Amino acid sequence: MAFFKYSLIRGALFLAFFLIAYMALHVQPFTAAVVAALCAFVVSFLFLRKQRDGATAVVADRFAPNATTTQSAGAIDDADAEDALIDENPDIWIDADRKPGADQAPTN
Image 1: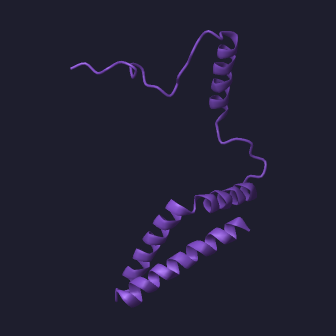
Image 2: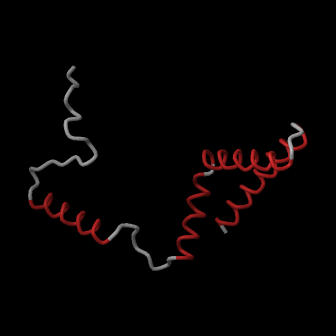
Image 3: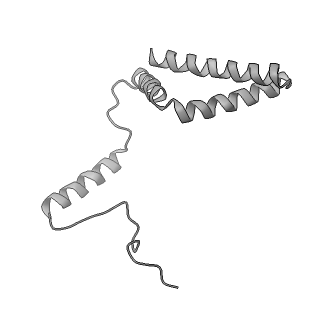
């Protein structure tokens, strides 16, 4: 149902932008379709995240119902090894999101 709902909203957005471009702005049909597709994409990308995520979940469940993760086996093994290292050494602090030397002020 979420996929249908999201597709219906996207179709309505496309139709509205197409009619505006074609009827009100008197643009050629092909150009109006391209402009409508781009505008519908931008609006749905910016404002329909919840519906898009729901539609994505429906598609993922339909095509890969037994999938448990999107990570490779090597990435999972690596994460498990890092977790084990941190559990064994609670005094070690790791910030994998920070680049080395990012806490230092730049010197010129």
